[in-house]
Amino acid sequence: MNLKLIEKEELHILADWLNDHKFMSEYETQETIADLEKSFGKKGSQWFFVEKKNGTKIGWAAKYLVGKQITIGYGIAPNERGKGYATEAATIIVDYLFLTNKIFRIQVDTSTKNKASQRVIEKVGFQKEGIIRKHFFSSGKWRDSFLYSMLREEWKEPRILTRKSK
Image (cartoon, rainbow, N blue to C red; front, side, top):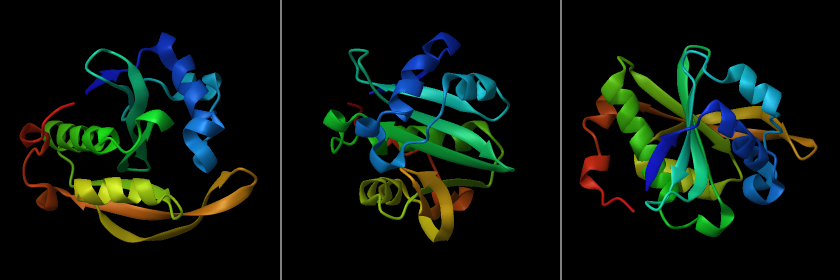
């Protein structure tokens, strides 16, 4: 699989996915095109399409600043889940960030109910730090998240080079 930087004129695809209950289930973010355009190109933020080798777009991955912390996120189309794409995308982003930035930490948060995402980030090497209570509002209610992080000394070296790409 590949990660391809999302161009401004492609933001409508990302907005459709982020607001599609089938794609995001209870974790939808309710981002409008205007919201995405406002944040597009801001320092510290990058959105990527997750693509199969044939160019088919099957999801997204992102890195963005939350305060002074670099946070990553991802989403994979329902019919492509369970095939390792999220793990590979997260691994690529982590390697990219540590190889190209003088950062000491990357973090990710996920709903306490999202077991699949928790498995992905634990496979990549993130450590659970705790619970962020009432962290995001989705489907009419406030939801808690787990906060995970990876420190530079835990990363050590690029892992994607040792993985077989799909």
